[in-house]
Length: 437
Image (cartoon, rainbow, N blue to C red):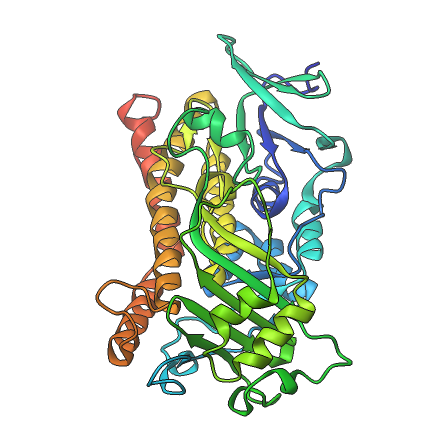
């Protein structure tokens, strides 16, 4: 069946759910030339699998560029700041030596380095611009057909047998959904995510337990106001006592099946990797008791050659699933939505849509892939595995400072301006507009 729409409106189908899609719906609301239809395979569009949504400073800028309501969302739903990291050598002859204190690094924003919000509340606010009839739940996309129609040339087919005619499809259905196959093909070498070699055990020590009993005294003070990041030899431990959280990650060369979201572990395996940290016995004890003896794999996409296929675009975790080190992925999803929103607001016809997707791909693909590489490199630093750096304290300090500086040089405003300029130049070069301005 076709979605009811005036013929002079462009039908924008957003598919997948989550941060990318919800934020894009907010970015496109109240655009009289667009008919936005939102398709979520889940029954609840605010459901998520993560307890927290973490945002770096540039993500707040991206929300502000979307609009006043989006920019005010974080304050509206409430937030807390993640404690700044104190990076310490966790193993070997330099154990206990401070590498660097991120609290003393230069700031480029009034926002804390990492702000944490409740995901469901954030998604509810982002979806607030959708009228009820535009929100379609329990809709699993199975295929897309490109037609020669001058209006609504895409037929998007769902598992329930329904078909909708739309002008553009933008989706983020996760790292192993259908969107990536629709864009680069199911047989492409970059379609499926790969295991990056890291397995993580994470636990929240319950309130009735004293977290200090599981930590070396140096890291047990509740009022330390720090997230302690301890670098080991192919292993990494961090704890933030205000959150009652302890996390341990280690590197392995095992052949992991990325279709498995978790792997079981044992106390003996945890002890093998974390026993040499200060307070290693307590760390192992906490992870054994409270992690469910489950390990989370770090997976990431190989770089895709494109984020678009005609009038179909992938975004967010469908386009650039990255490792969780420094929690950069949520901000990247918001930036995808901000750029796509800014471009599609300017698209008045299918030529405009095509130019918008072109500019999105040219601008966002290299940027998000650079961020993915930055996240991967940070993981190597945490685990003492970075080439030319290893476990050398001075080299680690220099590497963290360089990483921080390069990250701060990125300007969301310029990123947005570049995308809009590319779209206009594309339309001008093709003769669809009289001026590139």
